[in-house]
Length: 215
Image (tube, rainbow, N blue to C red):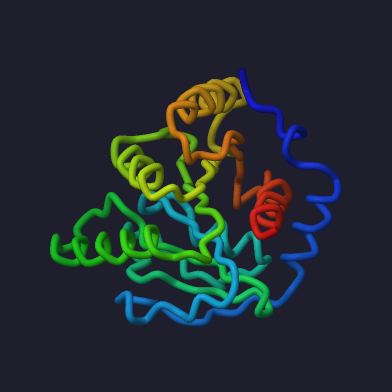
């Protein structure tokens, strides 16, 4: 059985989410080493997912900006932890995609170490939104990250992206399967979100979820 959105998101949360993302959002820095992480002086919301899952497109859509976060058809383009500031209220954090193609192993190892340190040691991290391509569902490398997040006790929430690429029945099955899978993961928030950056679908609920996570 799918988990009803109304059980978690009310009108006040929707209003708070819209207000949050009407604020100016600016790129702060790209971090390639743990020493470069900003001072943890405000709450952070991270976005993780496989390469080409649509992280940058989703961030742009949330912030109503065309090129705030760089998008590319080349997997592995995001090669840093990129920080975006919401008017000194919070950071949005775009993490390097995993499951990279045509990327040197030593570079992947460096990213992996940086991500592990960030997820385990960032006390200001309020929630990680784990993006999953709705066409493909949860894959083995997603499960690896989910296990890591469970062990780190980092609250994370699944976001199915590119839902406009599926028919209604396909999406309903994918959503039900994903909702059932997350029951096995203790740190996973119990509501699976669905979005389309292209069609702007589900952005209001995602914004509300982010606003609630920042409380």
